[in-house]
Image (cartoon, rainbow, N blue to C red; front, top):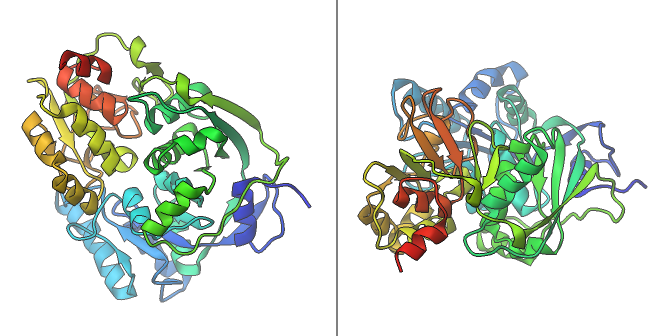
Length: 426
């Protein structure tokens, strides 16, 4: 019997096969089909063409308006109305909009326990690969494939080969999962893992919190990967229990499984890392950045809008104020996170520092609303992409960084290290 990677084992199980091989095409059963307010309306329009009156399982479809919500204009409102109507007609259980139980989809889905280890998940959003943090094979697809998934509960996959990312050591202070994934993308490039799995292994995995792992898996797509996936350890199992996920199925790569290559990273050697415009691979450590003034700072998104991200930012901003010329926008990724941040005093800290606190939304990450850049403006963001025009004008610039670097930069008015800001305050 052939040896398989972790991702290949999940695909084999869902395809009803004893084994699969890289490059093989398989038809596999799905555990969750996901869409948002940009992609789902297109899928809903295509759904009748599959000849099915009802979705394959009303508990295995999730619809989350989050990109242009709260609705920024009539078109956005129309998109959400389309989703709301379809969810009501189909009896879709997992429909989450503004207010109670709302949030940015890739933070909300694991928070609500809708994915567990061993699942096979597709979403009409490229950052669906986030759920690899909890040992699921999850990947982004197009709206037509989403429609097919909603109708049949199945879709096809080309089995990917894998890159083994071996982690050792542990992070130094002010270094996190965002720095790790930016470092990795800087090493291999934005197409370095094209249609491959990034499989994270090694003793360093235990040094990563679940929020670190979500951040890393979320940005696997920025290296061109089909998916990113972490082993299911006690930290992961504890998260699944805490969030009421279904009983996990734990898959492990076979000894001797074939990998296209191995990349080794010592976490203790990493420094805060910044991706310069206009690609996530254009990385420099904070020591190499130079003097770059900024106009806006965004702390949030499906990549770094979780409670620990807000805690890190609040610790740096506490008792300090942002630079007079800087707009700092903080976006808790879900309503639950917003409430917890309120109860812990983080939101007050942000407000007193001069930040704006937003309801959960993707908003500025995709140049949607609540943080659009004008011509010539420059932003530091904890988001996941810095392509030309991503956050507004095509002649604006986005620098990707961790919450620690983003918060420090808001105070300094230029891209800077957390250490420099903390030292100035002592």
